[in-house]
Image (cartoon, rainbow, N blue to C red; front, top):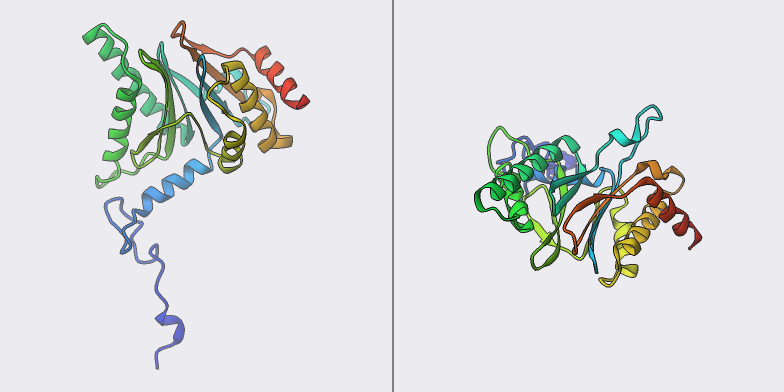
Length: 249
C-alpha cells in the first residue's frame, strides 16, 4: 500500500522548476523571476511622485553601520539633466541598468542634439531586463527601478520590475514597507501637490513606516522642476526641516 504522504504533490522547487530561468512550472510560472520580485520587496524603500511643478524621488539609504559615511551612499541617480532614477533590490544590478540608461541618453544627445524622452530610456532598460528572463545561463535582474523625468509634454514617472514590464504612475513606491506607504499615498497624495509638499508627504511616510529606525541621514532625495529641467539633489537642511514638519502632523 502506498503511503498517504507520497501521494501529495511535490513543491515545484523540489521538482527543479526553479533551477533555470528558461523553465516554466506546470502552472505557467517562472520561479526565478518570482524570487527576483521577492528580492525587491526586501530592498530599501524608494518613492516617486509626479507633482504640479515637476517630479520627485525620495529613497531610504538604509545605513545600518554607524561607521559608514552617509553621503557616500548613493540611492538616487542622474541619468540625464532632465531624468533621474532610484531603485530597490540589488543595487549593484541597478547600477548596471542606470549606466545603460546614461549611455543611451548621451548617445541620443550626440546623434539628435535633443534630450531623450523618458520612456525611451525606460524601454531600453526593460528590454535588457526581459532578455534576462529567457536566456539560459543568465539570471533576472533582482531590482525594480523608478525612473522620473520631465519631457517636452510634462513630467513622467515609470516603474520597471524584474520581468521587464513597466507602468506609468502618478505616484509609486517599491521596497520595504511598500504596502503601508502605498496606502498612505492612496489616501494623501494628489497631483496638485508641489514638490515641497510631496517631499513632506514622502518623509512623513518613511518616518511612519520605519519608526524608531528612521533618521534623516538615511534619506536621499532629488527633484526635477518643469521650469528649469535640471536634476537637483535635496540638501540635508531641507530634509531635516521636512522631518520636523512631518513630526508636527
